[in-house]
Image 1 (cartoon, rainbow, N blue to C red):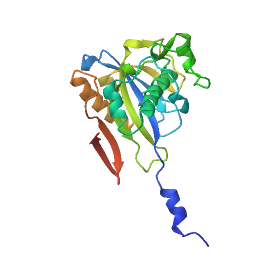
Image 2: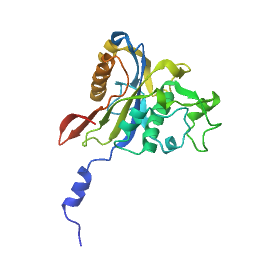
Image 3: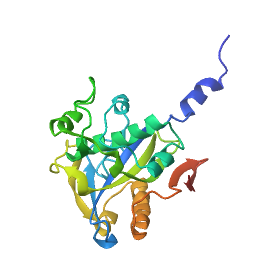
Image 4: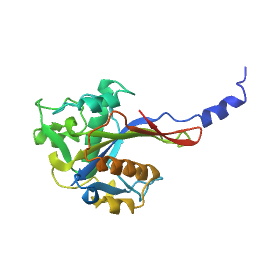
Length: 236
């Protein structure tokens, strides 16, 4: 029996499932909002974000679930993340943010490793950590917000935005080439850069957090998503 005429059309218009992703916003001089510096770089990939400035970040890899850590997530960060995923997945999101930051900036956010080596098959990025006796330090991370790519986009992400200071960052700024003009910008400089809409939004949320005088994750964080073409700012 032939399939209904609408079936192929429905398949083409169904929204792609968002992939879990994590972004890390590294800060310097965060105690003074106007003097705070933010690490950003210009995308070099050939996509809708080409030549726009972003924070380092990317999708979660399978290996991010098995990487040993120097310290675990802060309880309030773990609680916020676990509203939408398991404890293991929450930890993997934070590990992905640290791994992607190293890959794109050359900076290692880590503390003394409690295990001798990373498991077989772990991403090669962790070699740099292991050589220095380091492992990802999740206690350095605070959760800023979450954003889900609109349903009409061909590539969708369920992205968590973390904040950390440069206090425990190792090595020099030297990325993989995925981000050009990689440097520390003041908030006013960052706001003048060509930015994706979500990055503009996240900068506003970051500015509000800095104005509270604390980076700590509050009882409720912002969630940005699109429902029936309406762009919503929610709390979770």
